[in-house]
Image (cartoon, rainbow, N blue to C red):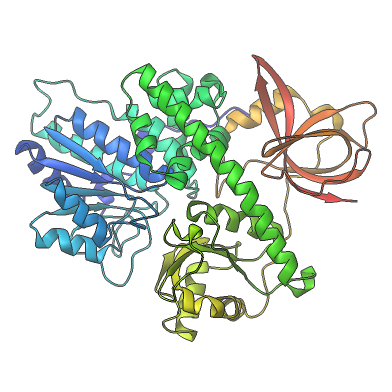
Length: 547
């Protein structure tokens, strides 16, 4: 078969979004009055791409002054907090536009309103019992008729900008200036959508596919192109996997290790030299992240071995804390352990990033946690249950079905593991979902071809809800070599004679792989490895088991 075509004309209409007319009213007024528009983004790749998109196109639409602010996860926490709103007031904005947050930022929005600053919230997260006193555009708010509930934050602001352009067009705004082509923002939309691991329904697949096509045609913005070059990605053959595993981590590294402004500035770079320098800086940050992550992962494994002598002793949920762990990486470690032990995992670190250097901690010190869950265990519902059973244990909490965050006082830290495990046991009825892996079958020796691998990579943007095909089989293990976080193997299908393939495993450095000549059962993706202008077949290992 040939790659499926997704046309932009097939996208759901922006007119179906609740409050979209009120949102464009605010923006049109700001443009006509020459007001200062302050875009407040988020510190992950979705927020960064959405912020860059908003700043870029509001400027193209003729805004006299557009600036942006992004929270620092170590000092502000998530969203438009009261502390961040106070900082925003110092730059004297006339209108605040949030990207990828704000639906639950009651205090921050209220503070802005008290100072006569209207707020336009663009978000995609689940809403609490009360919405802030603002114009809210969020497909997941009650009463919104927009069919796709899986838009990423960058997707929501993209729709708002499309609606704004339509309104400006009706008002004759572009009679004396060229009308911006919104397709020029699809590189950012596709990157942010894949990075945020939202479900790839038809609407999102359309956005991602068009963004990939744009990049393959050489129309990526300078910052995206520079990031791709730093990651040794051939833009003419870029795939959704490249976005997920090679571009997004570089962008996210800024928000995890220091300040996401570096990432946003890279995406907004207007010269190749500036883009190249910023992309190189992000790559260095990502390497620091990998190194620190490796240390934390080993620490977490040791703690698990200390507390739980065998897999049979594992509770329904794992809860680990360490005063020396990096706050920006606890979510990654939670995900790694979740995959390893197939149960929800909560990882905590001191909320103050300087806490790791303290000799002791006072009882009032705050810790933050990241939780990653498995399919079938709604982690936000689990935290609600935990709050019901242990009222006041958590200072704050919130999130999605698979990922969530919380904060807790040091004095309450010791109660958390038991409370977490009990809540999971309650919401699951005492039975965790099976960790059975479903694949698309086995490949014969003559099917490990470059043609098949290339077709699979180009067929469609793969992602959550529309996963890339995986296969399983039994292989003999040959040579093995680790390169940082990547382990590279040679493997031979047992049914084949003298037929060796290259296989790679990401984020598995330090795993106890067996010795050469051992037999392994592998679950893998068939992919194309492009190196030095030469393409070859490569297996990407997702799971392995010794036989």
